Length: 338
Ligand SMILES: NC(=O)C1=CN([C@@H]2O[C@H](COP(=O)(O)OP(=O)(O)OC[C@H]3O[C@@H](n4cnc5c(N)ncnc54)[C@H](OP(=O)(O)O)[C@@H]3O)[C@@H](O)[C@H]2O)C=CC1
Ligand SMILES: CC(C)(CO)C(=O)C(=O)O
Image 1 (spheres, rainbow, N blue to C red):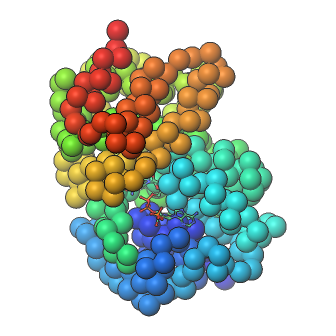
Image 2 (tube, rainbow, N blue to C red):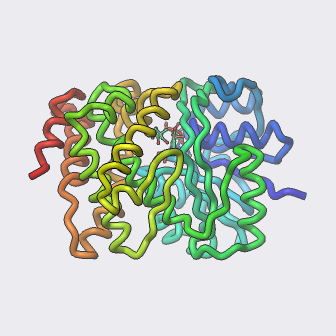
């Protein structure tokens, strides 16, 4: 008998993973704060569309306040700035021996572990590309790396079972003994995505722009230096090669950025979720929340993060309406370089 799953945050990432699991006959309950989206799922109108998959499905779906009982496996897929509130809300519904799996960007496992306990926290890393279009409609634009791992890297029966389950969604899902290596790797790649959201460029255009090249390299190196100082070995995925940046190997960085440009040019999701929050959904992003643990680790380790600091401030400028998305914001970030 497979473990029933609760998807807490049933948007682009959670909704698509849950839909694939439901389609494969797994017991899945969706939880989300958007009533119209919850209703669509409950009424069998959850539509997955795009080049990767196209199907409609439904399943039990609840608002957080409607959840009852205690559950053995909860996949958390809210944005990083909602992690703490969502984890506090799910806590009474997590079984004593249960676990929360963070399918998010950022180092959310640290926040989750503080609330539910480290033993009840499982790490995950997702790099597939998806968008929430409207209630009941999710766009699955591109497959990408999916990785799970215990926080201490141990191969437990529950992580093996979770890995098998994630392979139902992504056949190439990886079971890793260094999940933080992947999460810090994504923090490096994710910094490029965040910076690209300062402009209306596509991710590919931003990476290809020679005016941005030195800043991109310095930003990625700044983040990965924190990982390295913290004793983490960042791991590569989907064309991102953290070693190239850590070695400051010019040819390897050029090759990596060319690969990332190609990969993003071929994606049916041309811009980041952060850009979509700012430009389309006109709402706050999780940029500050994603970068908070990176900047905190840097301070603890006696490092500085001038580019990440400025990036957070510039995104805040957009969020609060002080400045509009545009190339001048990226110029401003480039201006941090000596
Ligand atoms: N989309 C992508 O391609 C990728 C996303 N990620 C990461 O995955 C995570 C999820 O992102 P994504 O799926 O895109 O985000 P979405 O906004 O599409 O989905 C998150 C859903 O969770 C809901 N939500 C917010 N707070 C709560 C809460 N307390 N309890 C239950 N539901 C809640 C949101 O509602 P509301 O909209 O009202 O806040 C939304 O419906 C993020 O960390 C993101 O950075 C990682 C890789 C790729
Ligand atoms: C660009 C993408 C999909 C890469 O995983 C992403 O992380 C985001 O949109 O926030």
